[in-house]
Length: 221
Image (cartoon, rainbow, N blue to C red; front, side, top):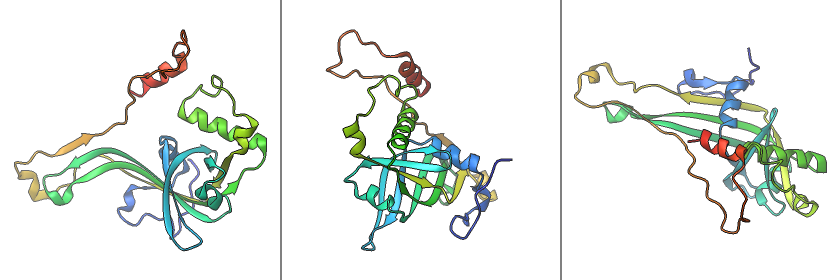
């Protein structure tokens, strides 16, 4: 059995609790399948802010990176409390009644406090994790970040203190009497797919699409 997050008043799912998952394996599956997360925080001026950004997971930590001038990176790197959310939309659930229309989804809410990485080796390792999450095999193919680029980049590691996932699957749940209605009901599935690779206009002649990239693109169609 996989390890679970503690359940408190902060991360407990109250609405339709049967859809809740506090198992780390389940939560991390939602996290790892996403390329974008939303970071929620309250500034020192009391202003709530939510910012979309790329993320990656390193064990029980979420990695977030950006420019050293980023307000978000400087805020969360100072150890302030934050909330990270991730959502996948998997289908529109069409019921016989308007009231029972819904969506199939996978979502996760994470809580923690970030730490700014300062060790060059740790930063380089984190950048590799980011790159390999986006395109497996890319790190060994592209040019490595140089010292100037690394110094211009903040990387924050956020230990996941509390988390929960919530997942809905399956058909609509209509009222019993509505099943006799002459209304189509079911699910319209939704998927994220990649298109065809588009070469840069300034690509050197003779450079072919590498196998790892072709295979990755094909797996997402």
